[in-house]
Image 1 (cartoon, helix red, strand yellow):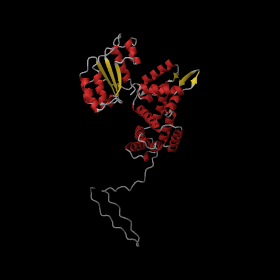
Image 2 (tube, helix red, strand yellow; image 1 turned 120 degrees about the horizontal axis):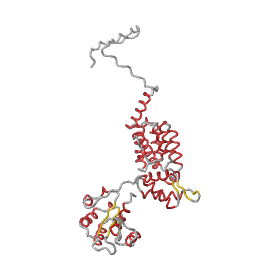
Image 3 (cartoon, rainbow, N blue to C red; image 1 turned 90 degrees about the vertical axis):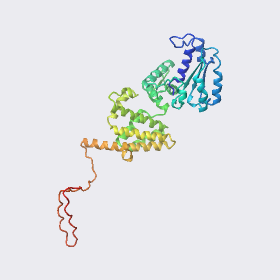
Length: 386
């Protein structure tokens, strides 16, 4: 979502109808281009399939396509969220898609292409839109800020880009909200990381480092106190859990990839700080944290008590012995191996009596007192043990 599918569809509609195209691109100056922009050209129709998903709606569309365009060269139908059409509507559209009139172009847009029938996909040219790189989103946000007359720091732009998860529309929406909350300096508003964190309701990066340190040191009391403080500040526990997953993902990348700068979206100073934190963790501990937090995130979305679920998760991470999963066991084994390598005195439980060698005959027991019956002497063992 938010990667520009509908916008590209409108650009294509202008490109095929432009009166003065330049190398295939619309001029954005002719009457047709301006009419498509302001919606006065009725030959370009945008249909919301979520609201018009019945067979009758598609039948009306099939009747309209027989009419030639009034102003433009082509009648362009942009069907957004096409996966919302019913099975009957898809069947009604099949014949028209297979043999459309020469003056009609259909553009189908969807975020869930796997829900489209194979008969529809086989009649279309498919173009996949990928997530927009965080660096490109941040650059676009800085360009928008410059044009609109406010400032935004590089760290804030990268944070918005990371929260947008590859969608430019979500990034611009969050930027718009941040502008209204940003403080003014010298008559201009300036958006910093604190403004973005407050607007999005996420934990600041310092809180993430504090939680990570408490988990690493096994300090469950400090972790619970921090959760209580964040909950009192109206922080969404689901957002906090997602941020912690992203934080530990960064630690995993730092411990696994020689040059991780292109895989982690963060300011250079923050990456250096994360490198110091990653050096204090073993990879099994990082993977254990990600697994626990992923399961917690699923339960948080199920409508259970979010604060309790988050507190249980941090306690499991602070005390791996409370978790019986395979990742927790690997983390504990890794900790024991590290202690042995470092020469630390690892306290071992009392060992059981060793099994006697089958080839060595045990010594005869000492004579018992006269008042106590002496046990029977064990017979000689065979030469080879079973």
